[in-house]
Image 1 (cartoon, one colour):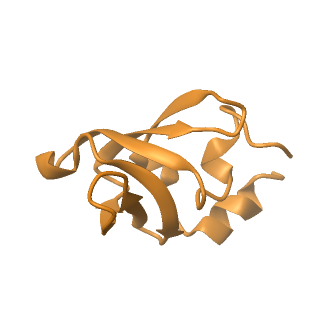
Image 2 (tube, rainbow, N blue to C red; image 1 turned 180 degrees about the vertical axis):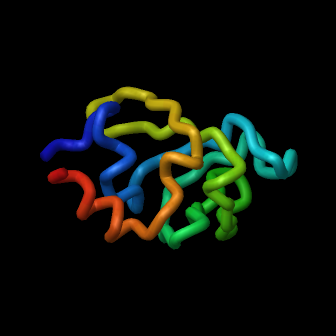
Length: 93
């Protein structure tokens, strides 16, 4: 299944470009970069300005993802909570 705005919450996020639109930690708002790792609670990006790794909690933020189809999609981080492999398993259900 191709990645699109309707199924992004079930897909692998590594490799996507993301921007933090809002977050409980104000220092993370506006951060953008490429997702290089994902865990149950966090995503890790290479910050596009500092080129440093930044770990961002999923649960407390709103994120905007740039999809390969040249579309921006806004997702509440609570929808992304969980292990990536568990979200992938839910895709077919």
